[in-house]
Image (cartoon, rainbow, N blue to C red; front, side, top):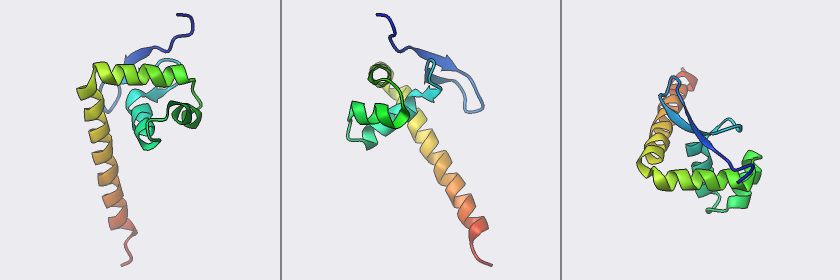
Length: 94
């Protein structure tokens, strides 16, 4: 189908990750937004300024590779929690 959203894999400091080709978004980011938006595809697409077809591609990838996406979401949450804890330590009044 012409214009169908594609998933690619890219490497980086955080390791290999699934991304939406041509959009610069990781699949886990789209899935996390989708969950926070009550699984509303249109709202998720508008938030990321991507076509609904790209959100559907992220959903399909997550369904095919649930462990990969769940693991990435978990790792990103842990990273954010550690960064927040470090920030609180440095931002605390002396």
